[in-house]
Length: 220
Image (cartoon, one colour):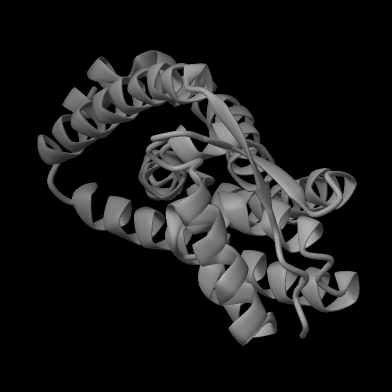
């Protein structure tokens, strides 16, 4: 039995199920709700790919999870857009907030107004913009068809790229038996600490005084 198997026995047996549940939940939340601003979405997808590389059917799981993560991201984007649309050009910011502040909402608003379709594609690769973009797009009354096409294309590229990067990195790490458990241990620890810190940061952010922000309509 290898060191990796000894160290990650439970992960070997329940790994794919746990990875699926955690990845789909995090991806959806990051694309739909403010709490997603504080979750380690990109690093989670890469780590998930590395974990799946330790399994015999890792390639199949990785491609299947890519499709699932794409679907979760698309669904999350639609939920975020609907939340913004219901706000009627008004979003709630936080005074002196780290992310959910008037300045950041205005930056996303300007980005969408100037670049429209392409801004939604670019937003997929910028963590805090990725979460704020759907709500701002909805509040700014961006054309839903154009938004849906752009956000869906972004999701189709984003999730598989990061998962496959992790998977192929994991495949390389598998060639060095002692290195895989070390890398996995560090990554899983960082994700757990990052998630806990993110939840704490979210609670702090939401505890700050609220202020109303008027979002300008997007002319795309």
